[in-house]
Length: 163
Image 1 (cartoon, rainbow, N blue to C red):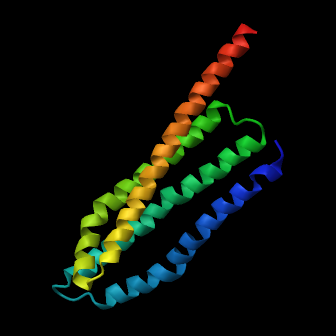
Image 2 (image 1 turned 30 degrees about the vertical axis):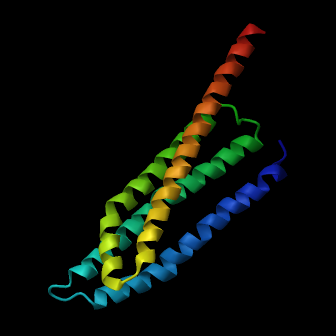
Image 3 (image 1 turned 120 degrees about the vertical axis):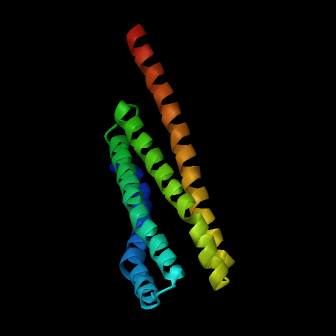
């Protein structure tokens, strides 16, 4: 397969990683500075904010690993190795990363709710739910593709044996 056929997808994967990197480098440190400035005895809310921000930073690890696995999968497609066990393994890793991200945000969602209630920002809870929902959709989609690909590999290997 020509390399140009997956160029758009590679570009999309890279463009998905840039805003998250910018948020981690520029946006979240400002929020951390603000939260640390409000830490006083009895300021539990600042500690909740720091906990949520910690989860946000931790969730970037599986996010970037999943993006890397997507690039690996696209490389397999370019090298005509799309119907191999390597592709199934990459999809399985993407599914696991999406489940980890979803799980992290499910754990932190009650704290996001408390922060949103204090700050009177219901959109914050909605953002947390969107992250959980999007991660679950990606996990289910990767699981479906993983199963379909595994069945295609099985059919292909059976056809290779009959010929």
